[in-house]
Image (cartoon, rainbow, N blue to C red; front, side, top):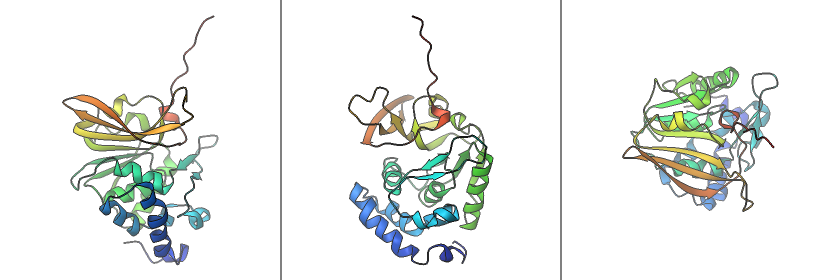
Length: 238
């Protein structure tokens, strides 16, 4: 359970969480009751910098500064997008989960109450430290947090039943897909190459069945690209 100081961030946190679930998340076709209950339990403000705590239950993307000068900032997925993407994983209580780029650990805390063992992978030392501190503060010391390149995953900790990427991708998924066990699922947001329909991206579920990776689009959504999953520009000669 969180410590007493959590209540000082947002005294009406429980009411705000219920409003978020009822007015944002349920209306975005999130119906998984176990997930909804977990969203009601976890105080999102605990996993935000103090200056962003008042925005914890808004439906906006929240930008988190990186710990490294001139490095990309991170944008936390809005709760309704995060929840629907998690729902797409079809989680089981025994699932081993790799949470990629959790930034400050909110998604990791949700997973810790929905699956089995959870590993959080961050590439930024300051963000990894923030995730670790926030999880410990919430009483989730059992969750493993590691530092390393996002696109390389956590091969020593795998294989995984679920790999979840907190952001959009263009390429470089092969190492992560290789860390799925049979029946494993990878959830992410895939940017559309030429954007012909005006849709910036699609939430995607990758699934490993008989050693073959299949894909299924879940819903249309926009999200910032994570640099580790950016497609390398190809040079052309005229």
